[in-house]
Length: 224
Image 1 (spheres, rainbow, N blue to C red):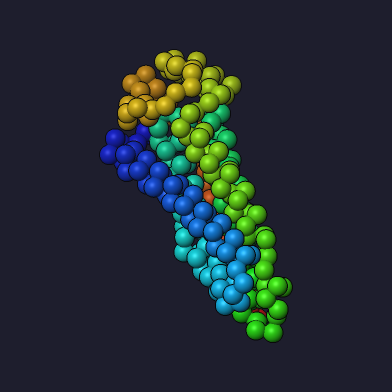
Image 2: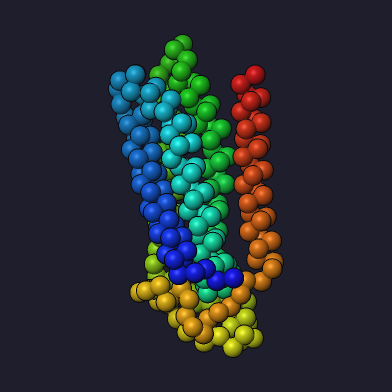
């Protein structure tokens, strides 16, 4: 079912805001990780690793999920579809991958914070290049996802072309940048989502729920 214009605008604005904020938060983590590796002040080094875990929970995690969920909602609620265009599939794959890796890496943040909080551990043993490496890779992937959303390359998938042909939709198979809200709901593009697309979304959400549950259980076990 297609979104109403008002809901589409709100979801689109939320998606852009959360995606850009996610990139900004990753840049901050790169700066924080670089400071932790280069600083000669022990308090600064330990403090950087101590703050990474809570900062990730309050910034990276909610922004990642907001970007992912609003992106899925836009795909299913507009004529772009979930797997009808290559750029949507690639962007979704990148966002899912980055979000899942982030949730898995939260355990590493917790371990590094525990080491940094131990005054008997030498400061050189506290330093780790892992956050800088992961944040840098995440930044590159998120910038690629942003470029995909802007340039929309590669055209339609075979599935998308088949659906367009079957429904008689007047798609223009070319790369382009939307200039108005009409690009998200062209009059001739009223294609409804297939039921299996909804099942796929539910599967993705279930995967995230499983990762979060396992992370919480693992955190409690680690705490005991």
